[in-house]
Image (tube, rainbow, N blue to C red; front, top):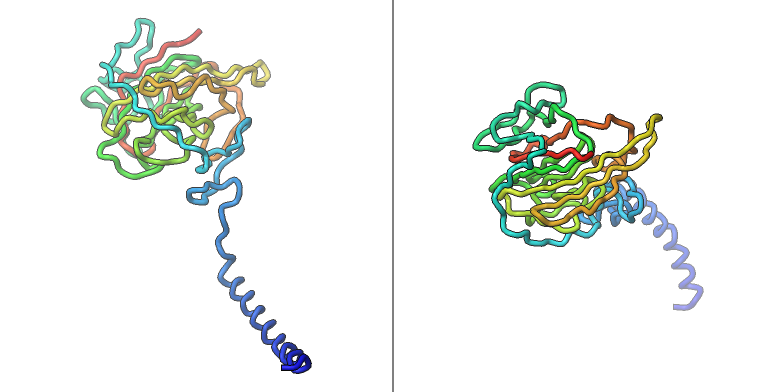
Length: 282
């Protein structure tokens, strides 16, 4: 084929190519753009949006790309310790007389055989008495057999001052975002390690909580701090909270009373609790 013939054929083909390209563009517009890789700020496991940036960290809240806590096997369970002589016993296995719903109604959770159990849709509960800086002991058990996965598996929470959550979750052989796993300071700090026992086994949290302090104008003087031992293993080491805990958000501190109730969360799962006591720190 000589050059002149080739040029004529290319010129004749250009309108058809242009029409084909136009048709392809219209089809893509109708179908929507093809899925792209999750952008920065989205979870790498499922592409779901993650939350606010966390100060001093390269992660956002609930980022599924954040490394999972290393698994450790806690030591053998020890007999349930009695509360110290200066402790306030919040639950002795007999009744919920010291607890209410967040609306002040009687707590509707089940009590039997020395434990209380979350009853779905009865609501979270809180102590009638308020506490500030304190040492807290809580024992809990995830349902057995295990049902569900991720956050839909043995989910509850311990709320210091009804505001600052230490996550309760069945994290034994179940994966979720790191800062939402068992013993996480929810949405802020994953546990240093995963010290979870099997579902159906009693677990312990021993928590040292230093409440935030505010000045007369409501300004923050010192932030809240949390140390947590999970089944005797250090998992939170005097961490400084960025503010109240929340889902995909990082709300700022707001001045609140020096003492507020301790809360336990109804997340719809029959998590059990027993032997809860607190020592106030002066």
